[in-house]
Length: 545
Ligand code: KIV
Ligand code: ZN
Image (cartoon, rainbow, N blue to C red; front, side, top):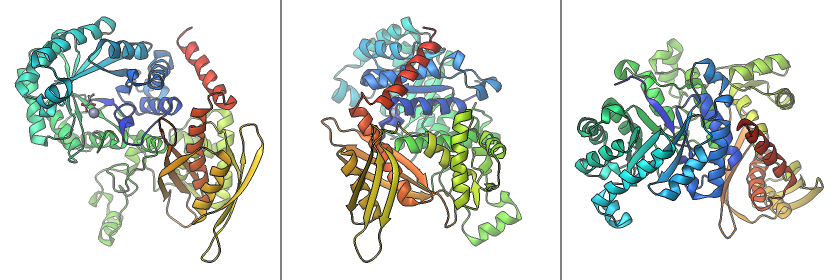
């Protein structure tokens, strides 16, 4: 049994199944690039049969992120190969064909196929007998194998399946060519002891189990996903399926950062390693949160805003005497350099570039100039610019959808007496300035009404959240929104924005989400298409066409 635990990230597949999370192809590509930087071993990029959009996104990721010629420089320097790109498929020919079509350009493609094995699923969902399930697994794993060497098979709802039947199905999957067997606790039902024992039993009783990698995939319905995953790893699993921030179907999946940091912090107990560059964790978490519009709860382990904050006097006193008193890992280890108050208005371009580089951002000349300009504006308002400010600034400036409508100006009046009023000026798709004023229940409501009157993309605001990036009254405010379009097939779209003025941040976040909505409707938008064409050209180039 090797002592390396493979990290299989399914943020872009199971994570995207989170209620309300929906990512477009450009956002998925950006997240996949960051996952490669983070050093995950496998990126499950999507479920290609489910929509042409998903097929396209997986294909782009396979070409641009999973291609040897596009190796992530940071990871190559560490001697790590580009990640395996996996596509999910039910155990049928059409799904497997689609998955292969999507992943085949990757240097290391994988087809991940699954079929349920619990009696509950067989009886109520599949209407299949156990023998039929065994036969289907035999045929479909072999079918996937004719395309690709690297095949993962998952017996869905394994946590509630009869172990004896599981051994039989898994044996057949190995005989048919599966190289990874993934054991999902699909409904988050098991406890750590049970799940560890299930995995130990599979390793012991499935013929050929020693020749394949045993993987686990846990859901968090009882809040036990990380505990179950760690228990299975102790029992011999060597691949953990996880998502960034633990997002995913219902209560979510095992969170990447928790498993990785548990293995690292308790190395003496586990004796296991991963290939993750942990200093990239905070940045990855922020990117995923910004793009999905799903905020991270403040007390979330590892990546929550309070994860390294010490409030109680007795704790602060201990920390001042020695950080080991109340800290089991250093914030820098996960890329949270909160104690760094680094730059101010006198800092030059070079210091700015160096600090960005230390934080993992490599910008080209034009982007650097743009970011420096924003930094100077911020430094004029704020005495010290912390690392968290820089991360928020970069996200606000560069992790945004194409601007079909752009915020030119905004002015609000509000207070206890009178009517909160916002006047908004946007630059429209043809470059024209459009001004509208509206009255609302508060300044944000008035702003959103004025924007709605200009953009005219009907929607319902599902979520609005705001938080201060750092401490202090001059802090940057970061806003995330999620909205649902009023279309025949409603879409849920997220947006984020940051500014020292929280009304401006709110307007930017709302516009970001609306721009995605409008871009989806107006495929002919010149700006959007320009970006898509540029990407297509780049993909053809990488694919050697
Ligand atoms: O939860 C689950 O069972 C899954 C499988 C497709 C692996 O997501
Ligand atoms: Zn799942």
